Length: 207
Image (cartoon, rainbow, N blue to C red; front, side):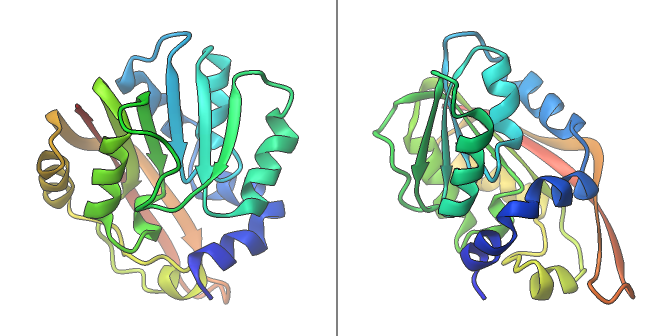
């Protein structure tokens, strides 16, 4: 099963699943780093059911929610469809459906460990940023919980922070930082024999 197929399958249950994985404070800390302003345009890449999108809308931003799963995008439309500031687009990591230099911010939460090529995905997110725009990624530190690859179809068992920093810089970003969010992602294997608690990093940089 591919990551796309997995997320199509769990879309209806994703909100409750997500709450068991990591807290709302993850998005609050990530968005605080970006210093967003009302009226700006943000892309939420790998938007899922709108974990990041929700708070961006509350702060008065225009949001383009992007996900490869149409089922996930359907859930976002159900939750926030009445918002004039929301647009949903189907798209993949290395071919985002946005023009060059078209958004003020790009957010990607728990997305990078599902893509085939993280460096290519970062370069693509930088492509759609306006000069001066900010890329903020929150994801998992490197770990060895292999059941997450088998059961949740993670492509990568987290990342080394120095690799993330290098990929940001190679993509042309400046003022790059990769720090601990001081939060953890928790998950239990389907059979209940393994439990994972993985630290979460936040990476940021300016185009």
